[in-house]
Image 1 (cartoon, rainbow, N blue to C red):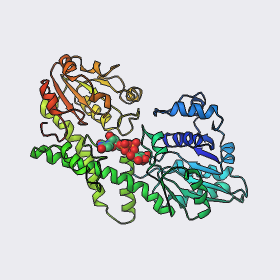
Image 2 (image 1 turned 180 degrees about the horizontal axis):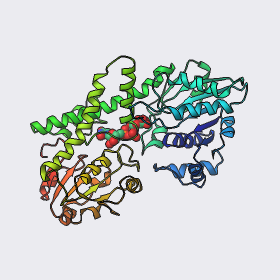
Image 3 (image 1 turned 90 degrees about the horizontal axis):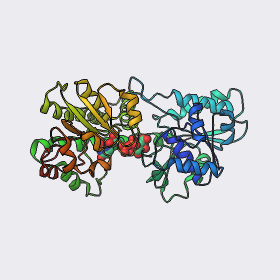
Image 4 (image 1 turned 60 degrees about the vertical axis):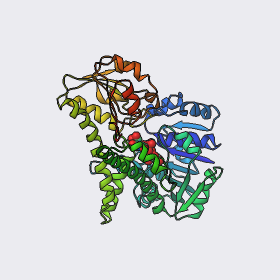
Length: 438
Ligand code: UGA
């Protein structure tokens, strides 16, 4: 099938490459020349495990073309996916201007009397797709066009998105047109997974409901970690005991410094806003957001409780600045925010992240921050170690040896990567999140 992808961010680029891998003829469009030039040369504008190799292969095999030519791109696809960004605006609502711009441009270049399906993969609030339809018509002007709109939300996680695309738990497609849904099903039918066919609004809401539920799970276990700290229980043991109940499940029960990234914070806020706009106060979501904000502060308070709020005579080794492991992304990263808070309190920071150093530098600059070239290097002559991202390589360092390089053997572990007892054995003063010996 001929497929067009509008937008080469995480969702667009990964979906395009994976569709091409499944045998489709894919054309990916971006309005940013530099991005397309990079992709053509096989250099990815984002870090994603396995993406460079995959794009390189499908380009060489001739099934993946990157372009900035809107007309050519829209004419190419029987199915046209909108994969542009929907960042939060100042009020917390999703900024849909890129989605509508793309829709209008699609309308402008849609060939006359040739049936096409326009699919929204970008995360958009309920009922947006009705407006997408209107924008496409607006762009087409007086031209006679024949198209339907489908919502096909994406459930990819950064870092594992190629695996996720091939092993998704479900595919969700929503439209009022059976013809359009049949066409979409063609793309996914080889996957051994359930395809949920539904109306437009339900498909749109499924995405927000899923992300908000996962964020709720994280805030819930973070709140439980607070009770653990006050009662002597251990949050890892509690999460394990809860997660073995199949109705609960073990995933997304890792207590930490709070959820971040370009999806959860934005989507939880946008869903809360949708509910308010529909005259419903979604109190549970307010609690989820509050708990997330507090969790970060509780962690910083552990450091303040030890050293006071003026940290100008302290140097901290910091492991991790990405919003989670296996990505270079620092957007809405709680780790990055905490580094900023510590620096704001006067601390000097020795920082290392396996993938996000470039993005960290862009955001933090050089004041008070030394960028190190290995995990080991952050231990040298620091007053404490602060772990902020759940990279697995941080869990397997030789702490017995490395902590001897520190001024003081103090570790603040914001991701519970280490075991309090192991740390005590090697003489480390250890602070985790909701651990019985914190
Ligand atoms: C999330 C969803 O997991 C995807 O299904 C969805 O497609 C994507 O948003 C999206 O809407 O595009 P992602 O933002 O890549 O994916 O990252 P997650 O792995 O979900 O992690 C989000 C945040 O929660 C991270 O800051 C992570 O550190 C935190 N987290 C996750 C925890 O604090 N505890 C956990 O147990 C799990």
